[in-house]
Image: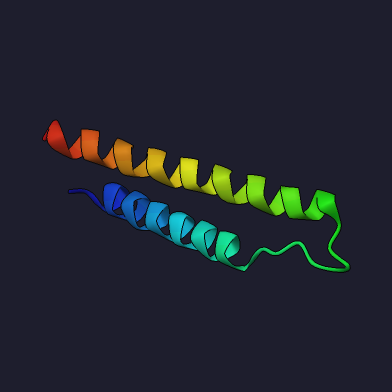
Length: 65
């Protein structure tokens, strides 16, 4: 595996971990705007999708070697 693949794999894991942290801590309580709440959820979902895409890209690249 090249350094680029390893960095992509780790960065994908960091994105997924950060998204899980966001989703675990987001709450709609008093003082939280609905737009901010939905923005946090959408951002976390996009982060999970990008992190998963990076993992899939690394898996397909390593299977070709």
